[in-house]
Length: 265
Ligand code: SF4
Image (tube, rainbow, N blue to C red; front, side, top):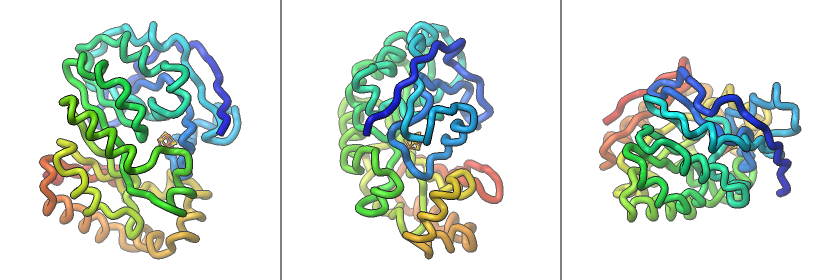
């Protein structure tokens, strides 16, 4: 896929946020070539009129200069893009931001890409860092429709292994958790020994958008039914499964009836 790259100069890189547990977000890119159909960040298309979500990426070319500033509190990279989307291979913007960052910054990185393993030596320089991989185990038609442009499940697991081998602190973000489509229990077994922390995020149907909702209803009507009619029992099932697993720390993120992060263990 050929993505349109728009180079911009930003005024700042560390954006204060009200996301629980996070003080600042860092988005050296806005927009994402992974083009997940359910992506909650596609709302930015309302004011970034470059075209459909997934076809463009805004690159803040002065991000490495802006990254030098020291900030206190947890910093999340990234929230409206994937820092290791394909364009990063060529632009190396994320890599240059990490190089420039004050290594005392408390950093949390999240990606769906095994390209993250390229920067292991840089991660090791940070005093407090955690690197997360989003996993969901999508395959075949579901992967093709929901996440056609993102790396495979096995590539993500391989990236976690590479990080763990080098003693980088890791976590997994099981997202979006969808009944019948995402086998959370099997994922937890696979993640045993690879991560210290697991977040399970239940799909936010509202933010996933009408295109995704239509695709879900068509591909997996039962999943749609459970999410809309039996949401509470699905969340309870997830919590019970997490308690049975040997994952040391786990939280469940829900968006319905309101946003909450539930401590499980
Ligand atoms: S990888 Fe993340 S930011 Fe990128 S399209 Fe998918 S959900 Fe959105």
